[in-house]
Amino acid sequence: MELLVVISIIGVLVAIGLPALVAARKHSKEKACRAVGVQIDTALTSYETKFADYPPSGGFVKGANDINQGCESLVWHLFTTQKGGPFLDMSTWEDSLVNGDADATAKPPDSSMFMKNELVELADPFKNPFVYFHSRDYSKPAKFGKYTLAGKEVECVPQKSLKTGNYHAPGKYMLWSIGGDDENQNGGEEDVASWN
Image 1 (cartoon, rainbow, N blue to C red):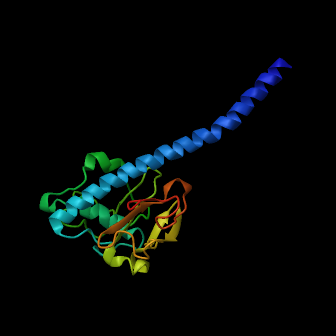
Image 2 (cartoon, rainbow, N blue to C red):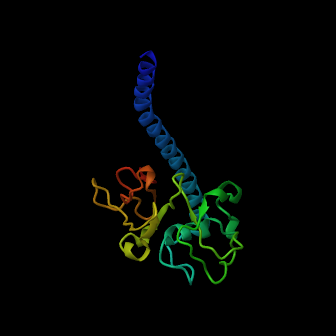
Image 3 (cartoon, rainbow, N blue to C red):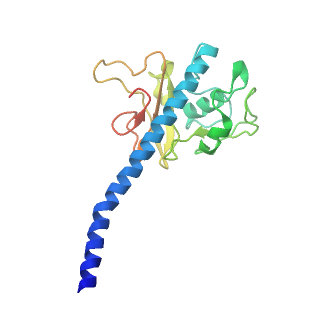
């Protein structure tokens, strides 16, 4: 009888503690995701200082599919060797580079740190590619909005502020992670966005 009571108490403690542990782990990854986003924002600011513009949302290389273009473009441009690049340290980011849509080019782009033809994306701590849009492409999301997130192909769309009715970060870029819920909310709700 005493053994059953002890087992019951342990079961209750596990039932109470497990959700808290899962929530703490998710919160920790979201915090890491925000830190990664800040590092990418800093790299984008450095890139803009040198090139007088932010990386394009896509269309920079022939032979690629039309999925994850914004993030692939982001990677190729931040790891350029031109004008004082790369703007991110390859040794720090190597484990975050993935090819979620398994596409490649005929040859690596010129002045790139990459010697392979793969078009890779920067993955967030949840192992999904970051979503990236240059501001000039906010109004044409269909061209660059297809992403593979949480194993599903989804359409991503730049969002407008509910307060002002204007796009977030006008004249700059939007960068977001879908976060731990594996659902794209286009930078809103539980997504981890650069403008929040």
